[in-house]
Length: 191
Image 1 (cartoon, rainbow, N blue to C red):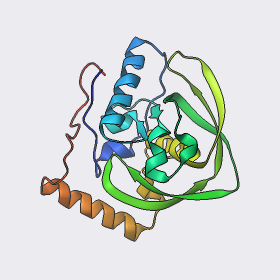
Image 2: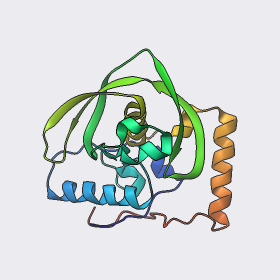
Image 3: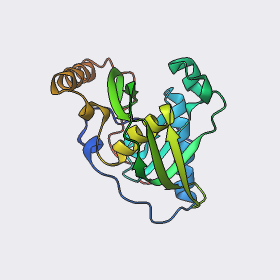
Image 4: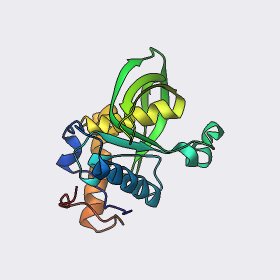
């Protein structure tokens, strides 16, 4: 398994929609395992393939660390999830608000309002189709990561003023070498 460098905003690759995975094969399974390792190495709870420079419709999620980070003890025994070609097929009218962060936006957070519950259809790492209903933090995380594979980032859901402030801070931090992350400049040949 490998830990890949992250694509850090502002980077135009984060605003490009990802392509559907046509076949779930060993290369896709390896990418999924590497994405989980990358997410763990960066202390995240979710990661989209685009965040490691791969424009494929793949996301990984593990909320087991959310118990300490968000006070969400319901997820203490959460098992890692791989969602390939995920799509939201239904969402509730009720909304919830979380203070979201993102591995591609280091140390930047903002409240984002999203549907409180979603129904999602996806393939797992074996190519088996599943449909789940997610609520709470899981629903928020799934929506955040699906946004990534659609070329949308969490700051697109906040005011222009807040978004511009966050992007300005990141641009300055990158110029000053203050972001302690290896930025993915291009996709390695094996992906």
